[in-house]
Length: 458
Ligand code: UGA
Picture (spheres, rainbow, N blue to C red):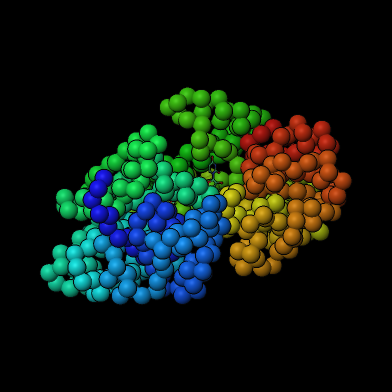
């Protein structure tokens, strides 16, 4: 398409905003990434992504060099530069409840708006409670200079950590919530690069153009569905444990039905991260406010199933170590336990609500001497849970251990050699919290193996 491309800004250079700013520069747009955090902006401007995401550093450096990409801490500069401003700030869980805290959205919009000097589009991307876009519109009305006709739209995103670049450049769908033809047109123009790339690769990117409320809901509905799918298979894992069945085979067998599908059907330690857990809670809180709480009551159960899987690992540890249940849970004192994995999933350094790290903490509270190793998450983990022992390699973590727990399915752990590890541990006992090891391989190397929702094998 020949129309001049709008200039884009991304407010908030956390995971979402930084990835978008970099990828949209790669697509050919002129971009500024904005953040109030000067240290973060200095890092990005210096060519360093402040978190681990495959492929992103290279794209950052390439696009800084192309001069299409800049970073700034000045609202004035951003307002002067941009035609379309994407709001990518965080919406954390409230300290005193399950709802989402919108203070960063409020700050970004009300600080940017007064500096605008021409008509522009403000596009929400952060995950928010339904109704937020209307409220943002009011904020803009209140804070933008009168008569500019600044408009608001909503364009939720669905990127997964570890696949962020691919998910932004090649999304499986795009959703626009808009109220006017001008806004819809600007949204298309601001995403032209994605459509152009799809055409050259002979793909289609479906677009759903809808109202504000629907666009906001699509995002949380998608995450709620994914969380439910994971908890469903983990509920089956509990039943498998009671019945002596194998959930990994059950999952494969039901997943062949295309109506069910095999993705997000891996039983294990359950979901964590900065999105699914907080999003299903905020969704319930918002539905409650809207008088539709009953409709989402099942999400409470989804959350509980997810938490129970963490307990299960502690239970399995006690069982394997031959420890008795006390009134406050099992006593694991004097047991040396290696925890492999601290991030909420592999190929990430993100430890937010990580099931692995949560279990490491629970084992330590039960008295165990916990030694943790993770290929990327050590720095973040140490900051979050300082009283565990952090090791610099898998071998150091497992050396002398009475029990090894694989809690994040990093390739290094999946491909670990049970014979070699068996030589350096104190006792060959392993809990496979992600069902990512081959039980036959490990048992033939003399290990007692316990998976999640799988029959015990000695
Ligand atoms: C999730 C969604 O997948 C994205 O589509 C969404 O854009 C994003 O949240 C967001 O709201 O920003 P992400 O948090 O990066 O992405 O992580 P996922 O890949 O969804 O994994 C979430 C958790 O579920 C991980 O702890 C993972 O180990 C667990 N999981 C995933 C399972 O336990 N079983 C599965 O079969 C799949």
